[in-house]
Length: 502
Image (cartoon, rainbow, N blue to C red; front, side, top):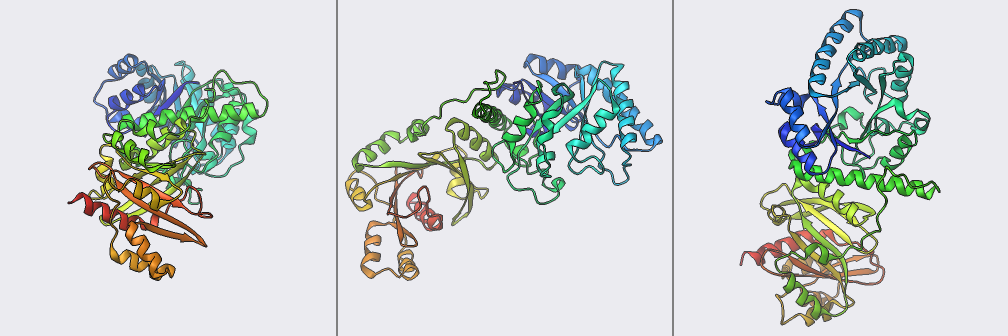
């Protein structure tokens, strides 16, 4: 299918946004009014720039608070629309997006709403233009997809159709099953955004927190599948209001956005095949899951050869995770790209502490391994420094015996990070450890955790001089798989900073 992205998703000037979208492989953009108003290029120059980038200008939006108004206000609204029609024709755009009225004094008469939309559509038709009507989830009287569809049907104009937006439907937990009964040609545009939470607050207040499909809690696959069952042939378009994305590099966000749409197409295709339906030629076919190999990720790591030498000495081991530091504004972009490349199936948040601040992020899990993406807005943390170069910072491996593994590499690598004496005193008191066991851990420079009767032993071996660590784990029977002890991060980060400062 064609892929589009709204300009407000990306940071920068309009030409920079268009360039980023084109370079990421998008076919078209939604031109958001704010981006046009602040642009120094003429309308002709914007149209030419899009042509040079092979980008379609799909839709101009939005016309707000148009319908459900008095006769006097309608006249003013129609004058405003005529100006926008002029702009659209100069840009070569044939579709205008109209959002449902969110003003407190909006009139709720259903026939009045339809009649006023019909008049707008008739004016647009004289210029061979189309109107798409969308219910905002905070609209005063039209706040469900069914309200917008009713208005479109009542108005009965061939150039007036429906715009569907996943966020406005799913944030309200609205039943969308009947969308499949709408004729696909009456859906003029389909906009997508996820949310990283179960929306409990009014959707207006969570508007700037939306995210890419697949990174949130909303049923993006089910909703998209239902819309496509109508026979809709238009683009899949990302319309995401996000404070994070608008502060991140446009090129990076656009790449992640494109990956999210490919991921979504693959999941919808899988769902259709599971129902016994034929493969859709318009959707990307699912690719075989790539096994996550740390070496495919860290092969360009400057000390990769040194790391391989250490691993060869250890003996039997298995990969558990690889960690990468990324800029705060690119966390979701990296999450999306990795999720698609390696068929990551679930994710959990990261919250760790560093002596210089807080580390946040998320862990993405596949069947065989995990990717930990860490970021920090506190500039003096080790993660913040590493994130400038998007460096890999840690490889986590599991071994059957931590002591034997550390002995094997004893003379051929740096010693493990030395944890503070107070840490071991605290361990002994917290877990009621014997003096012999506490001294054994101290001698190994091992961190320790216990859940129930199950134990986790771990050591951190620096490789190179930039702060990369080989994280060696002995997971004793019963300790949860693919689970690490974040509580010890504070003391480990302190020890690493002390090592690097020498």
